[in-house]
Length: 238
Picture 1 (cartoon, rainbow, N blue to C red):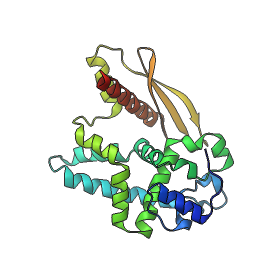
Picture 2: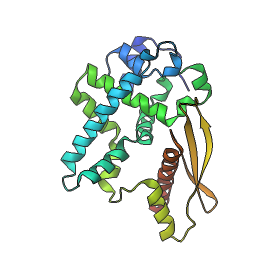
Picture 3: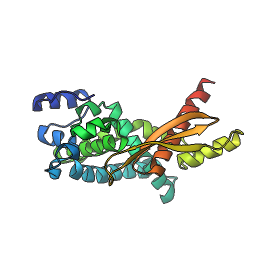
């Protein structure tokens, strides 16, 4: 649910309450502005900031993994980074920060459920990273990234198997004697050149996970990831 339009002071207060170390209200507002809300002025949206934030994020995570996982080769480190910085992980981090109510969307995007679209939420996270790097310091940006992505980083550091979720889920089914996972696309929305897909994964006639992505494959991977999380929670409960 969107909040009423906030003043600069209110917006900065909201960021501070969420642990987002941004002191520049103008850039903060831009980081939260989706292109759908400024169709006549696309440079006022968060797309350029997202571009920079993506690069900062990739560098910070790559350096962290290089320094903390000395026993892993380049291919292994690349897989670990991909897990941490994938759109679904960034969307989860943004959701944990409760950023979604602050997003500025156009009326059509709002009506189409854009506030819950993983790729859109992840883009806002990357834009926030860029603003922190620009207006505060590289160290502030690094601290923010490593703190807000701590669950994903911990997963990588404590998990021996970094294969993609669909492969891992398929092998779990084979090992446990279950039928192979079946995937179905249950929804798609957005403009023709900017579609988002929602997929569900079904095992034993039960939906075990659902996820969104900018392609059908990405949505299926996100669904498989959610299914694996559900399976892990069930196994921990015994």
